[in-house]
Length: 140
Image (cartoon, rainbow, N blue to C red; front, side):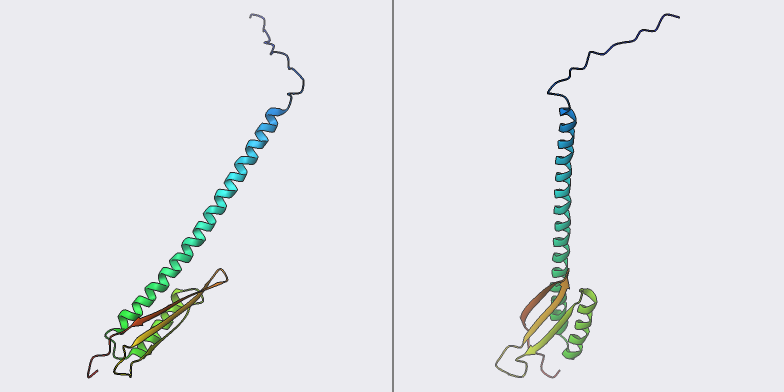
């Protein structure tokens, strides 16, 4: 068997440049960590904004449901009561009021005043909508 030979690496040069590779690696890791934390924070804020927008969209949809339900309704008070319970089920800490003004005055257009309130992340939100309603049909 031939004799084993040992390869010798070039001698290490010690001097003022020693340890900068480790320092560069640590700085790159710090920069990467900061970038990932920033991206994570942006993602969390984006998700919170999307959730708040979805709740607002739900509130607008609930208001539209009420106005559509009232167009042909004979028992408007019952429709409003059912709708208020639906708001409480669909929105966090959701409350709602709705009232019809000008229904008894023959010269005015009845107006439905809708107020929907909910809380998200401890912050209160509200949606206030006045909607003109057609007068109930004669004889109903």
